[in-house]
View (cartoon, rainbow, N blue to C red):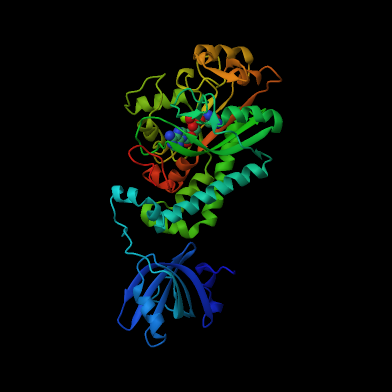
Amino acid sequence: MKETYIKDILKEDLVGKEVSIKGWVYRMRDMKDKVFFVIRDPTGIIQAVVKKDNVNENIWNDALKFQIEGSLELKGILKKDERAPTGYEIEVKDIKVYDYGQPFPLKGDEEIDTIQKYRHLWIRTKWFVDILKVKHSLLKNLREWYINDGWYEVQPPILVGNAAENTTELFEVKYFDQKAYLSQSAQLYLEALIFSLGKVYSLTPSFRAEFSRTKRHLHEYWHFEIEAAWYHLEDLIKAVEESLKYSIEKTIEERKSEFEDLKSITGRDIKELKDFVEKPWKILKYEDGIKKLKDLGINIRYGDDLGSDEERILTQQFDVPIFLTYYPREVKAFYMYENGDGTVKNFDLLAPEGYGEIIGGSEREWRYNILDQKIKEWKLDSLKIEVGNEEIDAYEWYKDLRRYGSVPHSGMGLGLERFTRWICKMDHIRDTLAFPRLRGGWLYP
Ligand code: 4AD
Ligand code: MG
């Protein structure tokens, strides 16, 4: 079967020729002696007209029976028509009916409750399809940068026996007669794999049972994580800035028409994105970030973690993303490299325009003694796991990585949905993926 897509027939040299397309009814207008359709497929829309005088009675009767989202195959002559939405029109000669369709339950102006119930149908919405395409490009181009730069893609486990992030909540699952958790981060496994492959990355779902309901939290999200041997914090920051700029720049090129649509929906202008690609990104110490916030009259003290409000205000002071570095050790995870002055060698990448954290990264604590102390300090050594007939500390394997040829290394995790939300200038993270996992009846569909 040869596939024909709408984008492939919107061509000058096909005018006057017979074309055929498969798709769904996007709009429909019955004019007594004519039926106007706008047909959509994944690549675009085209107008089609069925004239009563031009087709036999069966075809005419079929045309009248369609509902919005009915599915069909059309054959006809391609014509140019200034009045048609994309400048072309098909004068229909034949219709193959797949499904007339029942009255479609969505009109496009529904409240969130209705959208939630019909999410599986709502995902056909034009602007949401644009978002999915932009997200596809962002991920593809991000991967491309890492592949070109010599990194290996690896597949860490999702069912795990211990927590990567001691700072967030886990989903517990039954694993036969053992307790397991859904992974929050592939990091610890990526750290093991750098001894085999040097520079690695993975794309996995990450699960967070955090209770908070915000516009930037999902309970299941797609996590793009990297880890590299011999990398220090500066090397990591450089790789992150280069790879994100590459991904954004190529995505703007590939998704011109999607961004054109989105401009009227979310207000994202690609000029703004081009600016982010051209300017150097800001590196700011946590300490200086706190000073800045205090100067702005915000009630925050050195030692406090930044919430989404503080991140929003801080990012609004700059016109580029900020690498906020050297956080106090207490507010960050146990595995981060200790500077010895109460801070760790880490960064959060805060997206501009108020969006805030989209990446967390750090140089890892690679010195055995210090890591061992921290595991005890955070009381992570109380967690045991069954291995064969033995019961051992769940973090023993992680400590082994510092016993057998330990090296400096660094890595980061990017939330793909947070990245997409910022790039598309969206309000809520739930519309950056088809089937978001949120609390309150969001397991359906
Ligand atoms: O800052 P986090 O918790 O860091 C880690 O998991 C590290 N182990 C990553 C690493 O170094 N390999 O999460 C990393 C990123 C956040 O910056 C955010 O973009 C995203 O994951 N993220 C979420 N995205 C959507 N919903 C949530 N509930 C998220 N929690 C984190
Ligand atoms: Mg974080």
